[in-house]
Amino acid sequence: MDLPTDPEVAARIDALDHHWNRYGLDSFGVSKEHLGTFFSLLGWLYRHYFRVTVHNIHRVPDKGRAMVVGNHSGGLPVDGGMVLTSLLLDHEPPRLAHGMVEKFAQRWPFVSTWFSRVGQFTGLPEHAVALLEDDRILMVFPEGARGTGKLYRDRYELVGFGTGFMRLALQTGSPIVPFAFVGGEEALPTKFHLKSIARRLGLPYIPVPGYLLPFPMPIACDIYYGEPLLFDGTGAEADRVIEGYVDRVKARIVELIDEGRVARRRRLGRVLPVEPQEDDFPGEVSQ
Amino acid sequence: MRILVTGISGTMGRLVALRLLEEGHEVIGIDRRPWPDAPREIDLCRADTRKRPAEDVFRLQRPEAVIHMATVTHWGASREERYRINLGGTRAVFDHCHSYGVKQAIFVGRHTVYGAAPDAPLYHSEEDPPMAVSTFPDLADLVAADLYAGSALWRFPQIQTAVLRIVYTLGPSGTGTLMRFLRGPNVPTVMGFDPLYQFIHEQDAARAIVEALRHGLRGIFNVAGPPPVPLSLLCKVTGRRAVPIPDLLYPLALGRFGLPGLPAGAISHLKHPIVVKANAFVEATGFAPELDEVQTMESFRWSGD
Image (tube, rainbow over all chains, first blue to last red; front, top):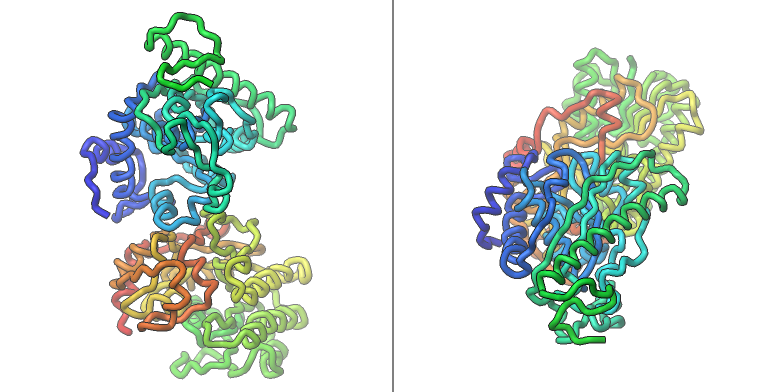
């Protein structure tokens, strides 16, 4: 497939500190060519569709392993794509991050190949450890599919955080960089889900917004990175200890979300402060 | 050292035997198949590992080490035959090792025991369970033989046993599971899937087996060569044409239109990768492949068939 590659994207990929074989593949089967196409598309969404503004991206380490951990939102995991793109296009030096994908993706033809070639692997602890031990960046949404499967009325409420990511971070000695993705919930304000069709297709859910089409609207988004948090431990601690650490990460993400939503309201000309339950997007149908 | 190689007439058996001779070992072999131009120093017994003449080799020659490679992997053999040779033969060899005071035994297995599935991880470690049968039931005999060989570690603790799970081999010989699949000019792939394939040059694989012997390894070890590459690239570099066939039609196309025949379960191995982590072996032996992935693929491409 020869889709045009954005020269800026190609230059950023060339600048990655990465070992490629002579066919432009790394040891995980990530391909420079596929990355070029993938990030050209995402880069367009990032710059022109969602017009993402990124804040404090320098807080993500320049080299070595790290886990970026944030809130999931907006029906489709476009937030993941935007975070990956921010690290490639707006971080100095560019960094390639790896997401942890739902299992169904590997069952589907073409989707399976594309996700594999651009380094977005099935969300398995083995993959997380292998990537972190190779000093790469792992992008984690501890809410999982429950996070993107939130309805608009529950927007920005963090649902149950898994604890697996914390054990993996401790086990591999990886710093955790919390982030907030703001705007995704307004881009695809999910009214309800098509559950039985989704089940038949092997999907976790199909989001249906007020305007019925399950595609996100071009809403400007923001990504706020927090300072890296390094926790002490081996990953073998009791659940109580791990949950305490997870709560600290979660609390920091909530702070970053609040910071982002306040800034957003200010930009949209709202009077401050506004109750968190209220609409913060003028074009949205009220509940 | 006096070393017995079972399955010595196969491609890997010959390569290992020649290397052992070169290193000054005394080599004896057991195989049902002939090896017409075998070096004269090699004492070759034409027998089945489960039969009495094979036991007599152990009894009379008293090898100090055994490298067990007598397994049937091609699909031409019936299931019964595969079980008899692969599992029954492995049992006989380990029993003889125990009875006749063999000090070191190496079972040469394969990395496909981990199996390929959409939810399987890349880079399997030796602790991962062998899941091959879940998607590819015809591999049951090989999985059983691998686990059975591993059980020698506790059943016969006096024998230094190593189970090697070696990735696919490529090389000028043109034999072996992967090369049989890539034999023709057209390679049937599954449309929309392009799994990573991990392989090692056959000479590097033979060297790895000899290294395992030299270091007296004990335990289960993955053995890998250069980093894996996607099947599409493997086809391209070896001068084959990948023919993508939709998943649902795939079983119908196999064995027809000049495409190789395969059991239905093999499709999982054409959709999903089997990639292993071999650092335990590297740490124990210092092994590094001499040929990289491109040289290895080209060595197969330019082998005349």
